[in-house]
Image (cartoon, rainbow, N blue to C red; front, side, top):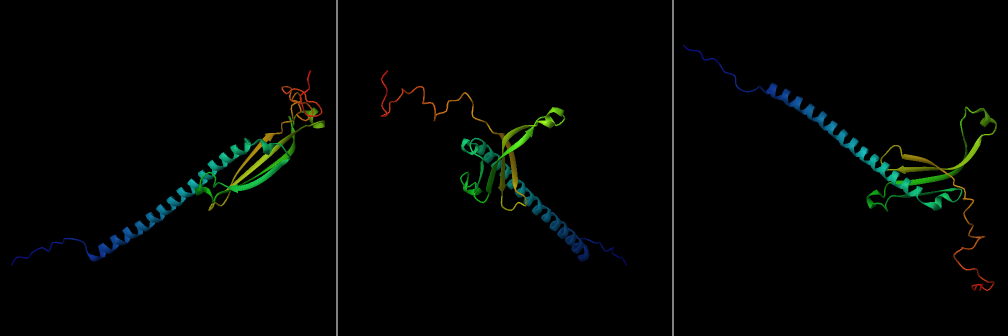
Length: 173
């Protein structure tokens, strides 16, 4: 009598279940990592957008001569004028006029008579939604005193205009 050797082909049910469990656990871990990566990318994008908008607003404020004429000021708003998509991102600024000491602290002469200088300190805060901390930019700008050789329009009439008489007409010379 001949005995036939039993050939074993394929996997047993236990082997298939173990393989499926390993694949399932690996898929869950990789999916969780992917979700974390996508969330980090979104946070990075939002933070970069906030920094770009803050830099743009800071440049806009620096170029506005009306802000630097008085004692300071403050205002707030959002970036909807840039793009309606940015309406949820808010900004606020505060400008304070301060007197600071300048010079070398090691100089003995200045300890008795420190030099003082006025500056404007600008603090811009941008608050994007969903971020824990706002983006804060600060800048210091010198207070420019009026130039001594500049004519005062209240005292000196425009030299290009002919002088006027009491009735407002031109004086004949």
